[in-house]
Image 1 (spheres, rainbow, N blue to C red):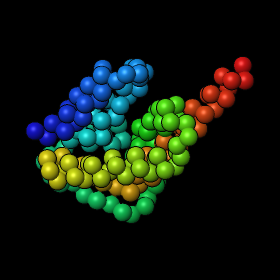
Image 2 (image 1 turned 90 degrees about the vertical axis):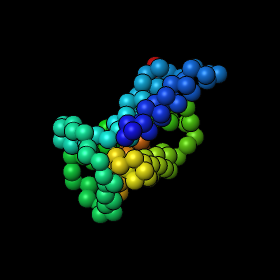
Image 3 (image 1 turned 45 degrees about the vertical axis):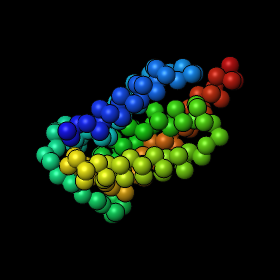
Image 4 (image 1 turned 180 degrees about the vertical axis):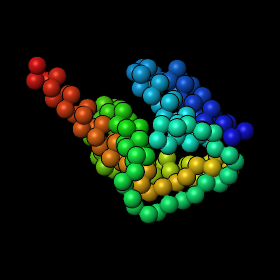
Length: 151
């Protein structure tokens, strides 16, 4: 039951991919599937260690402390998302898209943790790190496009 949400969202992503009128890059879909699994499965990933979380409601932290390895993990997790956003919606604000992305992920983790006892934490540092990852990914994609156009 605790894995149901991530499996359901992954199924919806696959359904969207196969039913969409315009084909989306399969690597982008694979990334989104992995992102959903990492973010919404009852797993704890800290400092290269993966563990299944015991049932619980998790915790909420509103203390900004960006000097942890988990911040780098969250930045790395959302860099490809920033590239996808910039590719499909080049006019979107990366800062706003990143903050919305981080906020939606953390809020959903909070709600799902309370509904299905995923025991996932909701942390303001993750929101900020996700926003930074989206911004970095968008900048990388923008630089890549500029480099291709100059060739």
